[in-house]
Length: 461
Image: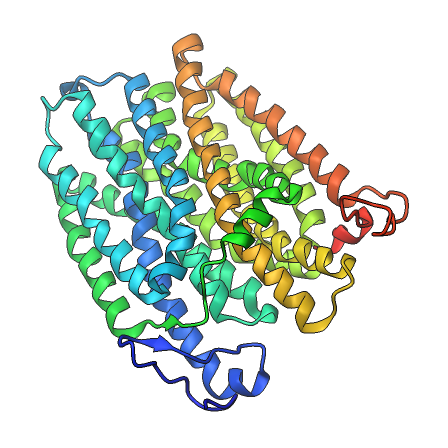
């Protein structure tokens, strides 16, 4: 029998399967667990990073598509909207794939699947290809968005509760940074006079490297089982949907703006592909790098408080964007947009960090203590992450559709920014009302049917 301080041994079923995994046991963690968990985190980030790059591939490819491709600005926004939609939807099945196949095995599969949209785009990327063909191939790229959900679910199982904020923040930030990396790569290719197939040719071998590294260095955890009951419980919990709504405001903004920023610069300010590429990577880069800081601030001051004031900042930045858009000030517009990216990244960290705290509070409200409370919190927070991540990503769809309609109706993105400002105001109100507003003491569980907890306790989540 495997002891708490001994190395995990793979079972007879073959492959890199770990039978015993107990990260909450400090002896096990120090002697065995931490080294294994960090190794899996590193290669999980690599695969998720490339997944994000492939998901946002078309935000870059549309910059290469000049008049000779015959696509209107509305066509391009529709294309990127549909890619974002697929990436959001596949996050749900990807969340449960880890328990079905194993974290290592699914990382190999999901990384290998990225070859499909990349090779397909390499094949069709030329003038004369129909819009419907571009749309179909673009939809395939959406599978890259699912890698985030499976990666977060997998890494969540490897780390103890006291380390999850750091590990999940690093995992998510390392994945998100795939967006500016592919944009920077495109900048270099455009600047050197290369075409889109050069970019695609670079990523095909990188995908193979990610799959091979996962096969060689990652592990599956035997006791991570698919818990459909947890998924049902999470879906029935109102906090799952409240946090999904708030995550639309942060991650939805990040991914939506990542797809749209270059197109807005081209269509509203007449920037060339090279001029747009010079600045489009800055916002996603800073937004990705600051995500772990958002988690750290949430650990220190409370995720609800950080999220609340972060929405205020996003509202102010959006108001400045409206003014810059109306005044046609490219410099002010660019700076405000980059600030909005940074705030969306900060909010990504703070809102996602709220999730385990919320369900831990629910466990305490049910009278659970110690490991029982921690297990309850892990069960529901893990199950809710896929749903929250999927719904949050749908915000990117809304952003691109809003820009599409705004350019059709007004010839600029101003109308879309007005809608975004109103949405951030609602996010602020919901965060305050649900997680920070002082309310009456908790109703005893024997007389309440909704397991009501004191709202004040959420201020520390």
